[in-house]
Image (cartoon, rainbow, N blue to C red; front, side):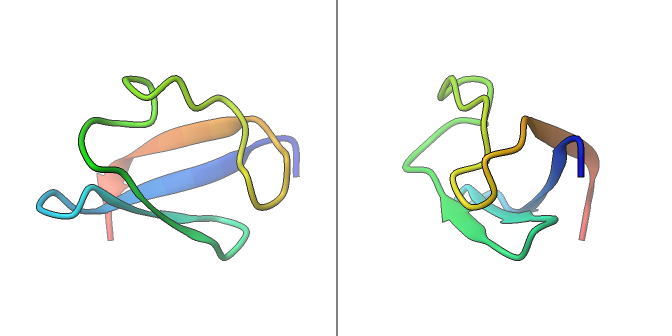
Length: 53
């Protein structure tokens, strides 16, 4: 993988699922708003998908 695709799952919980199998919850905001650039699970650059599950 050259990047890890993250998909937005739930607006209420700010829930994301990563391509590498991880799940992440923010108290608020998006990956960019929280300045998250690398996937904490696989270490690859994080790319937020525009599509939802």
